[in-house]
Amino acid sequence: MDRPIQKKNNHKKLYFSALAVGLILVATYYAFSDPSSVRLDKDDIRLGTVQQGPFNVYLVGNGTVIPRDLEYVLPKAAGEVISVEVESGDLVTQGQTLFVFENQELLEEYETREIGLAEAKAALAAKVFELETQKLQLEMTVLQAESTYKVQQEEYLAQKILMENENSPVSILDYRQTEIRTTQFQKIYELEKNRLDNFHNSMQVQLTQYEARLNLAEQMVSRLRERVDNLQLKAKKSGIIQDVELKPGQRVEVGSAIGVISNPDDVYVRLKVSAVQGHRLQQEQKAIIDVSGVERLGKVVRIDPNVKGTTIDVDIELLDKEAKLRSNMFVSGRIVIMELSSTLYVEAPSNAIENGSSTMYVLSQNGDQALLQKVQTGYLSAGKIQVAGGLNAGDKIVVSDTTRFRSAESVALR
Image (tube, rainbow, N blue to C red; front, side, top):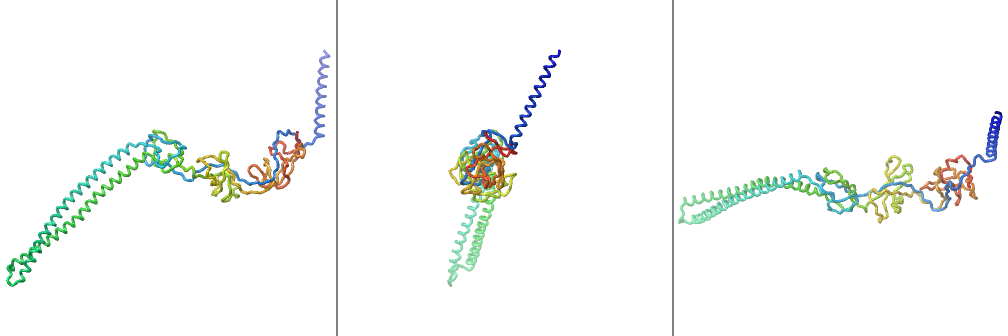
């Protein structure tokens, strides 16, 4: 019974002895090692090399392609969609049919107005015929009165000459009667002429009333005909049509936007850039737009004075006229704020501060250590930062995240 108890005591002695040895080893390690140093594999960090040469200060942003000249497709007649002749992205030409609508009420009203127009034309024609007949009768009456007057006037003049002879064959009584009849026929002739002139004025007034009714009917039919023609909606200009979502059977109302036509050759780029850096922007600054991996040259043409959230809108005009861009295409761009012919620069570490002092881990000459030191920095641009002091061309620095060993003054690399 005594042997198992003795064996158990031996195990406890061995456990405490091993623990004491481990504590001694740990204490020895910390006693003879640098507490500010960290050991890392080189593969666990990313390095950047200080370079000297041209350095451009960019203001980067993302944006979209915007057409300069937009033509909204707006129906001028309400109706149901019968057919959709185009799809978004199609190139259309001026006058091409885009959509066909149906409006039964409009067609019935158009037919009714056409009947009314035909009736107005017939009424005017009948009135013209009636008035022309009356005018002819009055003109005949005037001619008859004129003829009678002239015959009587000749008789009067002849008797007047005879009365001047001493032995006139015409008696005084006959001469006076002829004179009176001549005066009467003259007045009748003048009255008939006045009657004809008054009829001309009356005729024009009556015709004006009928012509006004006809013009009103023509205007109504013309407007309805235009609306009926607009049931086939045609393109007002050539370009790329977008935002087409109509389906047959849908109802459209007058003035509702059902598409947009834009000129693919007349577009610009609107970039959203940081509002904090907005004070650096100026008109005519050079810009480089990345279109699907191809860089296109442009320039700043407008700077929005209003801040939207944390960004400012900047409009870029493309100088490369061969660049084929589509509306609403996503692009990225860089605006050149400053161009330095020669300076030191390096890939910016995550903790780099623009125009200030930053602490960076710099590789030793033999590359087995990264030592923490202060570096004077200048402009920060597109992931790179200008070196104003503390580094030389060819120096290597740690550019990957150093948060995990930030307190260490050096990092041993193996």
